[in-house]
Amino acid sequence: MEEFLTTGWGILTQIYATIYQSGYLGSLIAIALGTYLAKKGTRITGQPESYSGTISSNGGVNLQKHESITGTAKTWLEHWFGVLLKVAGVILVFTALIAFVNLAFR
Image (cartoon, rainbow, N blue to C red; front, side):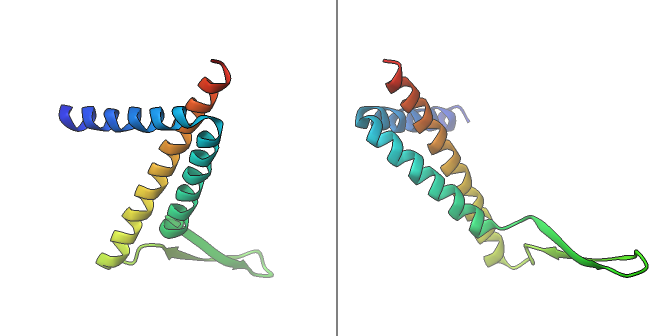
């Protein structure tokens, strides 16, 4: 576990250093790329579940639950790939924002 965390931290610092060395343009490109990855991951993953329904004239409600994952292996793989893209996008945006702020105050 220690090796995994050390490697992950090394990758994050290399990404930060690359963004920082690229200046403001590199920060803006990394923010745009991270936002794109997060949106693409959200599109692939979808909502965990959703509800739709109608309200009748007497005030009763009829709701139907719609599951996003039906249980096939392909669907589960797509779901986890989407989650991975979302997490990678968020990490990239935060790293780029930190580099952008450090560039502004150097």
